[in-house]
Each structure stands twice: as C-alpha cells, then as structure tokens.
Figure 1 (spheres, rainbow, N blue to C red):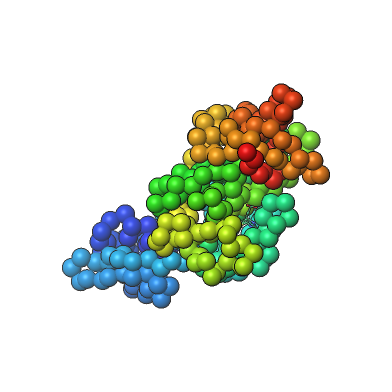
Figure 2 (cartoon, rainbow, N blue to C red):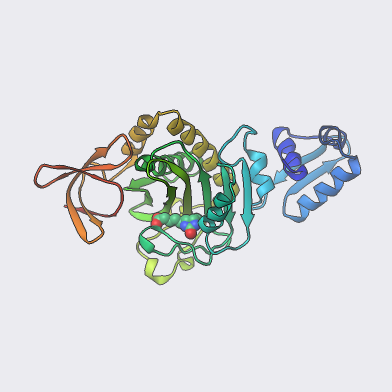
Length: 324
Ligand code: BTN
C-alpha cells in the first residue's frame, strides 16, 4: 500500500489520528505526514487538523483514486489486490488484456473515469462519459473449464446486485444473462472475455459498466427510453468510490465461493432476482431465435430453456426478449 493509502486507511479506521501516531505507524517524519495530508487535500479530501486531536477525515471527493480504493479494502482481498485508475482509456478490458499477457496476477482491477471505445456484449458500444459512471475490469485466473466460465458472469451480477442493495435505495432486477435493470431500464452490464485452451481457462476478464450519476441529458438520444442510471432510478447522487469499494468486496466474496465449488449458493441468489426465469422468452443466438420458457440455471451457470417442443435447451449467450 502506498503512503497515501495508508494515511487514508488510518483516518478511516479512527475518528482522529495524531500526526505523531501516523508518523510512527508509517515510519516517516511528522513533516512528511503533513506534506502527504496537503497532497490529499489538493485532491479534494477534506481533512481537519486540530492541535489537540490530530487529523480527521470529514469528506471525500467523488473521484476514483487508486490509493483511496485500496485503503478501503481488506489487505487479504484477492479482487482489488492491485488497482489502477486511468483518467481516460479506449477500453479497460483492452488494458487488462495487455496486463494479462504480461503475466499480471489475478485480482488486478483497472478503472477508467472515461472510455472512448467502451464496448458491450454483441458488438455494442458502452457509452462511458467522464466522472459519471463506473467502468472497470477485473482480471481472474480461475481453475475452471471454459464451459464453467458463465459461473463468473453470474457471480458478477449477484455481487453487483448485493452491492447496489447495500449502497442505494434501488433494488435491481437481473435480465439474463447479466443486464441490471431498474424500472425496466438498463443501467449496468457485464462483458466477460475469455482466453482459454481446450479444457482450461488461461485468464478471464470481467468488464463491468454501471451508469451511476448520469442525468437523462447525459445519455445519447438513442438510449432515452431504454437506459437509466442509479441516480435517475433512486433519486439521489451516489458516491462512486463507496459503491466501487462495496462491489469489489462482494466480488471478492463471490469469486471465493465459485473457486470453492459453491456456485449453487450464488445461482439461487441470482435466480431470486432474475426476471427472465419463469418467463416466455425469445433468445437470439447468432441467426437463430430460440423460443421457450426460461426455467433455471444449470450447474455451470447456463440458462435452461424449455422449448415449445418440450426439449430442454442449454444457452450460454444471446440476446433475450421477453414474450407473452
Ligand atoms: C453489456 O451490457 O453489454 C456489457 C457492458 C460492459 C461495459 C464495460 S465498461 C468497462 C469494460 N470496458 C469495456 O470496454 N466494456 C466493459
């Protein structure tokens, strides 16, 4: 952890911390502590200083700063063990793909304040305006077979739902495979990209996009009527660093569950929030449209659809429309 991250962690863990205690903990001089506090103030952290009580963190900016995010996570975390934040990039999935090829450890997370070529599933664009949403990617190296990768997409969706339940007044619904909706409009999605050999996953990148503080004017006209943000759905602005932290904590927990072979616990949670289950659906898979009733998830996270002819089909990807 950097010195700034350690100072923020110490300020978060107690109401007041004296300069002398910080200096001792961090093995630096009191003057150096003061210089770091000044740097943090310039970034927008409001830190009160009193001669008797020491330093106190009174407000944090709505900025994604790697030190800040790291200081909020447990030292033992896998997801978020190393965090980088880019002011702007083409796509966080592309950055992480390069890191993965350079043998980066699993759990590395890359955030961007803005993306110029953010992408969604099925070749769609993910609109990523600066400072309003959360756009980030997580590198994982699970010991799973490629056909089990869907478990991690399901894990990501449940982690997002749990984090949003805990941090906002919005109660998201999941639309299979991994769209998050509020009031029938989409505000978040997961793009899973996989590098695999015949029967092993080399690495997997979870790319997560969430519309957090957008107002309707921040969306392009073609998304009006189909997209929303947590702020629009819940009626209040959300702290992006606080939400990002909670998501990384929940993802860490769910990743551990998948790695321990406890995917079924997640599948139950996912199904309870998925509005696609129990509905008649049409799923476009390539040129084909599969019609039937979405019944449940199987042990690998694939959707089981009972067709009009009574056959049970296993679907791992596609574009769903709900039918009557
Ligand atoms: C979808 O619903 O189609 C998935 C959207 C995923 C968007 C995120 S934003 C961060 C990461 N980088 C990208 O280019 N895409 C994902």
